[in-house]
Image (cartoon, one colour):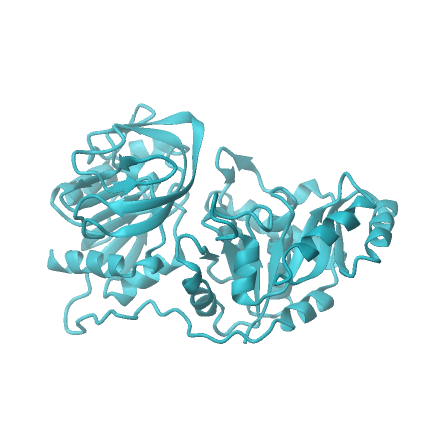
Length: 450
């Protein structure tokens, strides 16, 4: 059993990331092995969690992976740790649109049998905070709210009024945090700026968060609450389950893009590739002029190529290497940012030219969960494979699909999307391969086959 708690809030913007990251850092600095987790598909918050704890930030998404995998994925990430802190998503009861509690913070808390700490933005209220907390604490009796952390408190007097109001609520106040602009991370069109783009400043921000939490929260009471979590029994997820790599065969090198422009990836993807028999080697398209030696396949995940289009375009040797690998038939899996990188140009800047398509920034944000079915046989999956995915971008690729599309999407509207060409699978859709581990096995097998 791992001591565990979930950090939730009534709504987005209440300060979940501030509190969760600060708690992770404070407990890690106190000598505890802390396992960081994030409810939902978000890639950016886990980067800050990893910085705070020194361990990979992992996602728990009951929509992408299914409810049955939430516990095993949690147990895999938390193995050997003293404490697990799970940051929620949106408001506590907000989940996949039109699907009830599915993928909400409350849903994941119940799946993990974990107590909840509710973070409340108290900046514009005093006595009303008691009604709000009472409502959240009583809405679903299966969710145990074990305490409240008051955020954006204006003064000592304001804190006194809030605590007095909550005295009769039955929910203890575990902390009160003042407004602190110096700990805020900068944001832009898709949310916080990722750690990979501001590591030195992010380290300072995380240190400031840890100090703020230490001063404003009762860490002993919070740890005691986490240790009160009921026993959770179940087998940990195993990335090697079902994979039996040929130990006598050479391990194909799978190059995985990273760095500031391609910072979105789930830790489990690299683990699945390695378990399937690949030698996973990272590289940075902003700086490396060659692919890793002997690369037999390529994975380019999400990120912000639109921010770095001039620099990516200027790296002509790597663009040519990527194009040569792809046109030679090698397996290439490109997701969202990777899709943009494979087009002819992005905002007028030449890219790799693997796909006969152009990409540009757009005014409208495309965001949401998607039901998908593979339209074409590819290096990732045979036609007919059903997956759940997530779109999150403020760019447009024209055309949106090739002669052999990658996916048919069923919500919110029916359309085809993405490109399958030779060994290339390129799409806007983010998927979690743990939901369909055959994807990694199939990809590595194609890499090994040459």
